[in-house]
Length: 479
Image (cartoon, rainbow, N blue to C red; front, top):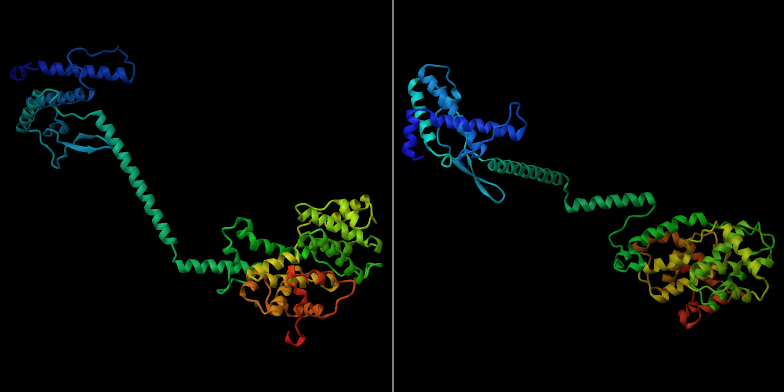
C-alpha cells in the first residue's frame, strides 16, 4: 500500500491495527506451535512476507498496538494509565557490538526517566503522534532486536568473563610467585644449609670451597654414572659393617697366620697366571676370610678353599671366567669336581649369596681418581694394598680406611700429592685419622720379605708396574 494512502487509512480508522493485531495472534499461535501443543488447535500464519516476519518483529508490533489502545483509552477518559506505555517512545539507537569475527548492531536500552509521567491529555497526544509515526514505517524500516544479536552478545559476555577469570588466575599466580620468590644468594644459601644438614646426618662432611667435584667433570660420560658415584661409594662404605672380619685364628685348630699368608701369596700367583682382574683377587681373599671366621677347616682343604673362592669371584667379576677344570689343574688334581662344587656351595651359603661386598681396591681407585693421581702413584698404592693381603693384622681394618692409608703413604713416598679437602670429602677421613695406619703400612714395607712370600714383590718389580716395589720406604722419623 502506498505510504500516503496508508496514512489516510490509519487516521480514518483502525483496520491496519486490526491486521497487526491479527498478526500478533498468529505470532502467539506460532509460538505455541514451536514450544508445545495448543489446547484448542493450532493456527498457522499465511499471507504476505510481512505477515511472516520474524517473531521478534511481530512481538514488537504487538507491543505498539497495546500501547496505542491504552493511550486512546486514556485520552477518552477510559481505563487507567500504564506508566510503562506512556513513556515517550523514541527511535532506538544502534551501537556496534564486537564479537569474535562479526560486527553486529544492537539497540541501546531506553533510559528510564527519573520523574513519573502524569496522565495528561497533552502527553497522550504526543504519544499518539509518536505511535502514528512509528506505525507509518514499514516493518523493514524499524530496527528491531534480532535473536542472532542476543546470541552474539551472550557469547561476548561469556568470552569477557573467561578473560576476566584468566586475568584473575594470572594475577594470583604472580602474587604467589612474588611471595615465594627469593634472591639467588638466598636460594644458594638455603640449598647449602640443607645439604650440610643431610651430610651431617649421614656422617659426611660438607663440601668446602677449594674442593674439586670429580663427578661433575664426568657428567657427560654415562659409563661412569657421575650422578650416582658418590652415593654408590657412600653405600659401600655403609655396608662395611656387614662384612667385617673378626680375628679367627683362635678357633682354627690347624690353621696359623703364616699358613694364611702362604695361601694369599698363591692366590696372587693364580690371578697373575690367569690374567684376572684385581677385583677378582680381592673378592676371593674376602671370601676366604669370611668363611674361616665361621667354619673350622683343616690344612688339607685350605687350598681347596682358596681355589673355590677364586672360582666364585671370577664368575662374578670376569667376562670370561676360567673353567672349573682349569682350577682343578692348578691344584695338581688334589681335588675332584665334586669337592669343588661342594665347597662352592658352602662358601655361598656362608655369605648368604651376597657377593656385592665393599673391596679396598675399589676405594683405592676412587680416591686416586678424585685427585687425578698419576698412574705411577696409583700403582704404588696398589702394591702397598696388595702386600697388606699377606698380613693377617690388617684383616680387621675397614676396606675404605685401608685404601685411604695406602694412597696417603704412596703420596708421601713419591712426594706427588697431599691429603686435601677433596680427599677428605670423598673418603670421609682426615690425614690425622690415617696417621697410625700409615705407620703400620710403612713398617710392613720396611720389614724384610719372607722367602715364601715373594710373589707380590716380584710382580711389582716389573717395568709394567713402574718397578714400584724397588722404591725405598720412608724412615720412621719422617712420619
